[in-house]
Image (tube, rainbow over all chains, first blue to last red; front, side, top):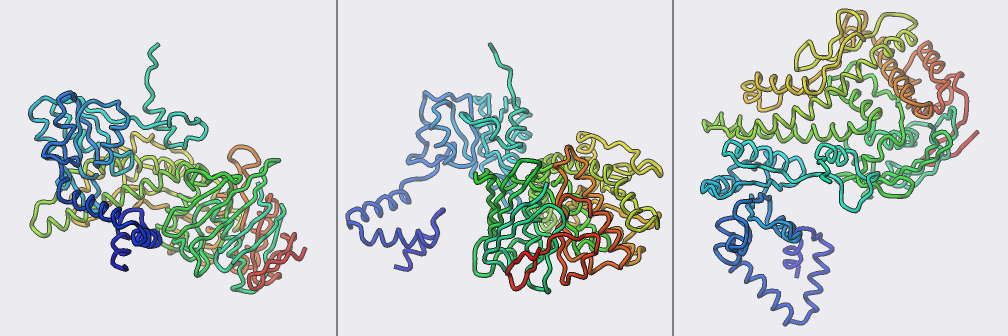
Length: 194
Length: 389
């Protein structure tokens, strides 16, 4: 029992108390439900891997998005993690393809460009199909540094390099925005075309 | 502005405490180790989000508990405000203004302004440059709370850049080729934030210099001239006064400072790799305190050093008081300072602060509080707080 609690406690967002609750819940559940969970976990380990092209999680060699011919192959969106792909897909705004870096540059954690899928990105761009790169790394220090690094690396290749806008949340009040966000929104203001 | 009420929960020695306060002078009196300083430390923490006694937040939380809560009611003109700060060591603090939570604790900075005098102030004059940089940055944040963001961003970028330089230096010593492909990126970020911090500091020093000179003259009865000079790692010409007129110089704009910092990093590249750390920028700058042309550190006597320390705090008070309307006047806190001073400095300090809107004084014995500062008195014994008058 303690082994199970310890293992659950390693999961992100699960503290010792929650781990104990989950463990006891599993103990009291229908064995059929638990076997289904075990099967799902085993399947994830056995079948899910990373797309050879974009690095996103995938069941096949090439992920669903990379193999979808209806996707626009000229626009590439660069994100840090697979979960960012899920977030952007939910918007249904973006019809291009992705490139998952697998993190952000952070010397403190010993992560440099060589530890990210930067080489794969450059290789992918060699074919010349991609004309625009959207840098969608997190708007924090490490994400910004990664974006700056990539922009400098890719600019000489003659690509259009863009960065996601930072600014005011939609549906919010201006007065509640913090100074940094408001300042960024000012920097990124755009012409209103009417 | 003044504080009308303070309440503490699990702060330092207090499980809970309630202290109503009035404008004017209030003396907190009680033997050592009874919790007087804890009360004023809590008020100071709400204003600056840091303690004047310790650099980490862990000692602020009562032993055996996870968090401390300080609640301060503030009156500014006719307006009342309540700021509540939950101190969580090792985590992020949470703040509430008038009972509504704010996104980040630092959004609550600027609600309360204090200037705190403490025995630790002597270290600003006699101690390491680090203490003088902290003095500048704390005052900068009190004046313009947005610099709290600049300051913490700068520290973050600096840590990343130092980690990179350290790793590169290690690789080089091991005979491998160091990975410096991202150094330019960190240079860009460090110089952008660094220029903003430097810009803020230079403006601050320029405004503070004449006030320090005037305050020193008052405290020491005209015994010498106190001057501040900002000495930047970007070069002597940045931030220095023109000839002997301390206020006659222009502060270069952020863009110039940014370029200078980039250039300086370029020039120091080999040295930075050798040392494995960042050698240029505001974190290595120094605020030089001089007395009659000689550095206060090393040359000034004990008494002169105390006069300088008092002058720095008094000029901070003057500076904050001069910002905008009268309601911006900060609360003065004198924590155990009178016991440290000789009779004449004691009397003059008392005279200079007696006109302030609110003065909170802590002292071990009532006799330590000068006559000029009569007012309310609160006795503090074994963590219990009783108003005597």
